[in-house]
Image (tube, rainbow over all chains, first blue to last red; front, side, top):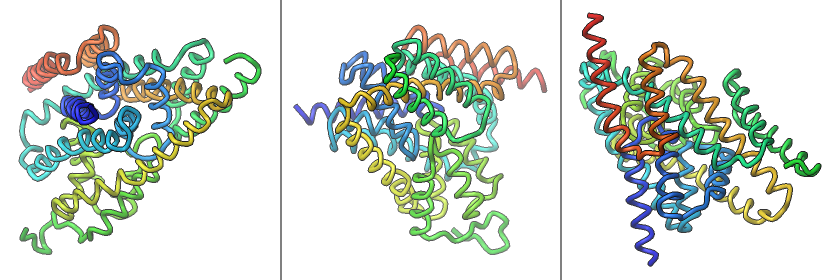
Length: 179
Length: 190
């Protein structure tokens, strides 16, 4: 039932995108809940690997959703996952963009803009926790994650720099039997 | 659209081709997300929007559902090229990164049994989790400036991260409370 699977992907991804605020970081917990916990389309380990690969590639972080779609149902899954994630919310944005002048002066807009960011910070931290639980299996993983977190928190550099360093450290550590 | 040359809001002319190639560049140069790349191309390099107008569009993207920066791409594409401009901008943004991503994943699959690749991927996955922690910390440092904002951040973290409750229910409860609270505070401050 391939068509059925594609429909489920479409509904899952559309739903996740349309209820999230703050981008991919807030989508990760929800898509993890649906894809790994509820539907069992991927294991925790596959989820973590997909996330790692999508972080190394250039482009919008939202490509994590594309990657999941591809892993679950091939090229058709890729197309459905990407479109379901991007198109409906883009249409909403486009309509809002045309009314920007009016929206920008509305009182509720200023209040919403002040109210949402703290919630988003909480969601990003939740996302970090869920990704860490999927990706980290031993003490070296904890050290590597902490290293990248501290580096990112204290510098303004490109994330590819710390990620490349951790990959090299991981490979060397594994050769010496520590990973 | 009857915007005369004296209109301060008049936009520069941007062709569909320029929109496509501009966002192609954003996609290709955006490592670890496109936030910096989109600003660089749209404001600094092409000067399609002033920093101020860009900030307004970005602010709008932040209260709308979905992927903020993808949404902004649609809004900017629409502003300069209408619906077809929006579609071309989105294709420009996503096409190359999707192909690179699939290439990377295919390459990974070829060597998935190699012990170095296994160790490297495991390390990258742990590092990627650290990446989100770092981003959360950095954002939190600027956003969580009151006890109340810290309180709301803690609530959404506990609900999603620890209790693993669905996002819909969490936001349906917390967002209206946070907005109502922000209204109440705004009123008190005058």
